[in-house]
Length: 137
Ligand SMILES: [Zn+2]
Image (tube, rainbow, N blue to C red):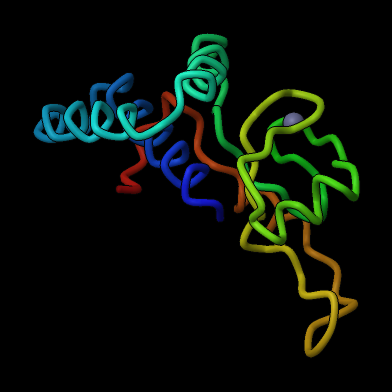
């Protein structure tokens, strides 16, 4: 994952927990963490990030089997290969979410090639909703 996308993902998690007010004992640390991350991210990216969060969406989402897990749209080959080479911060062409290559993408070659991804695995790879208090820090 591109380092900036990673920061956006961490910010997405931190602000999700802040929004949920959970866990209660970690709010100050989360707020500090979120503020520090915001200082390291470009204002234009933050603006887009905030637009997505304000719309109640996860701002950062994985791409699995070439499809954005935020909106389900298949991404163009250009975006998909750019993601593989981590050549920058990328956004879904359809929903605008920041995207990264998901963990369940099967390898193109070698052992395991040709095996489809089960529906259950796809569901499991989806990030929790912002208001879902799942500890992931
Ligand atoms: Zn999308």
